[in-house]
Length: 115
Length: 114
Image (tube, rainbow over all chains, first blue to last red; front, top):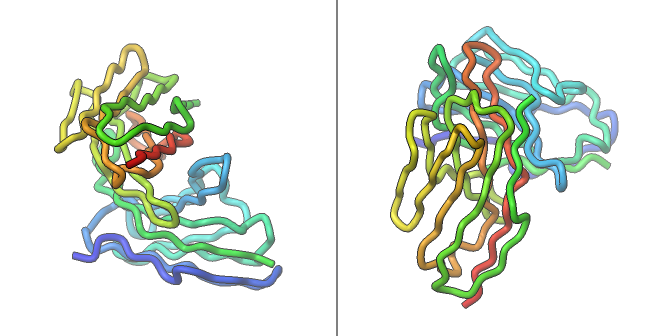
């Protein structure tokens, strides 16, 4: 049971380039989410999904796209990288019931630098 | 909008001391509260999850309490060790059927000195 895995661990992009951050979980969790973590701003939700084919925006969605074609995978796409997107990105997953989310499991993170 | 505050932002203690980390939240309509540990350059590791109907949870030297009516949770660490040095984050899960999302505090950076 690998839990939540993320690739790559580190990435350097030039402004304007695009890339996809991969996230996968093997716990059959319905809920998956992407956060970015920046000094002094804490963890902020980018996008989330409550199941395959269903995604929605978090508090900082601009510049990012997501899709969820399977329960296991939830990739995050940067369309045209900007220096403001330099951050550490975390993927998380949990069970989801009708009245809330259960224990969240986080991946190890992707450290992204945009020059 | 839910807001989560953690006090203190940083704490330095000698090894062996018992300590308390604080987390407060503004909206008491929560589903649960989760405490995490984050080591430098690493992801978040779940420590304890307290459902809204519970008052406390214990795991080893850790004890987390929840007072929903006053909007507070504490994480008690007994007999601290240098290996406990890390940033501790609390996150509140809302009671709602859609658009559920956690709200995180900014964390308390703990240093336990040998």
